[in-house]
Image 1 (cartoon, one colour):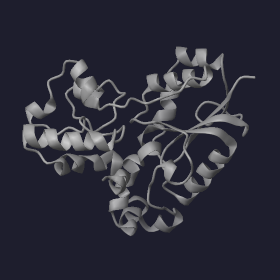
Image 2 (spheres, rainbow, N blue to C red; image 1 turned 45 degrees about the horizontal axis):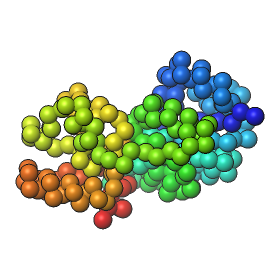
Image 3 (cartoon, one colour; image 1 turned 90 degrees about the horizontal axis):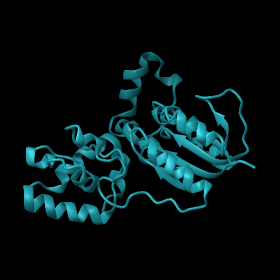
Image 4 (spheres, rainbow, N blue to C red; image 1 turned 60 degrees about the horizontal axis):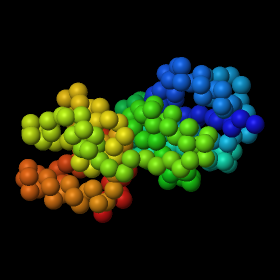
Length: 247
């Protein structure tokens, strides 16, 4: 029996679900080894007998909370994919604004028609077995995860910071250009794509570890005379929810 896979979406742009469809040739290989039984973006048929459920998007409404509990109930393994599902993502920016203000701004006099709650990662509501962060999720990491599941091998995300990948790419550190970058504290796995094209890392893969924060605080202060607090201020774009858990 092939493993049964489902892909679900909550509040978000659904870019991570789209990234799966963009795998094209690799997706055909995957379909030889698994059955996709529930995927709104890719099929009309639906089944709730699920071995591995992938979820993108944040829990941002009462309906999201209800839905993610249903996904958890029907999935033997639940995987958060993308920054919104893993971190709360850009959705959490609303948590730092008065609810009435952003609801009125978006929906006008019909704001009461659309109930909302503070945005949060799905792990704040249900147990999550694995996380594949990023904005969007890194397609190659998704493929590696699926291969690990199919061959009963352990899956481990990178345990180092984006700076490591950046140096392997031979990039000049953006701090040398006077640009504050979240690379020293953000989990690797993206091949430092943003700094490689001249843009700062904005932390879409989340904080790598408390140890990385400590090391970055010392290095940034001693080498660039920049306090860590100034760097972490940029983390709010994707990881505002993480601010609650920082040491």
